[in-house]
Image (cartoon, rainbow, N blue to C red; front, top):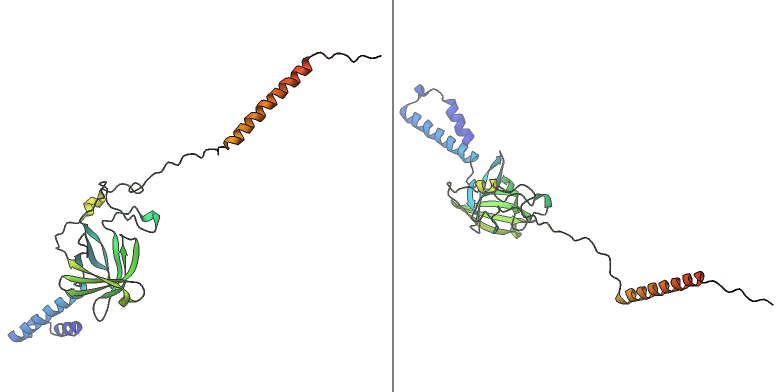
Length: 235
């Protein structure tokens, strides 16, 4: 319909040929076209949303002309009890466990459906380090149903996200203070060098006894060799 309205406006490009009523009609049509283009460029699902826990917020935005994506935008508790920025420590890939949670991509490849909503995307849950397929359905001006599933959508689990204010402060400054890669949540364990196995006590005692006996035998032999031998008497 937007295309048809656009063609009508383009057909009459000379305002001098319009009557007052016609000019008002064209102006209204042009406004409808502008609204239609804006709606296509900025879907209502885009924006900042509190997740179902209220402890985090995700910014959903247009990533390609046909898909939406999202990243963690705000955290109620951005730091660990040790005062360090939270990281993706449950990621199944060890090399990614030092990524800051703030700014972490958690939604992607969401495609708009003809019947409304978005589907066929992925969602990543940093609390578990797991990924799922995901669908988005706007169920109110400020309510977004997020359904994560594996395989069939109707077997998935849905959560309700609530629209956050546009002036919600981002957690990016906290993430900028994160330690260098490899330092966060890294626990160095000093492994002691292996010690030689201890022999049983009876084995050590036997060894000492044999060693002492060998020493005595050697001493006797040396004494015997050093003592002059009497010649054997002969007839």
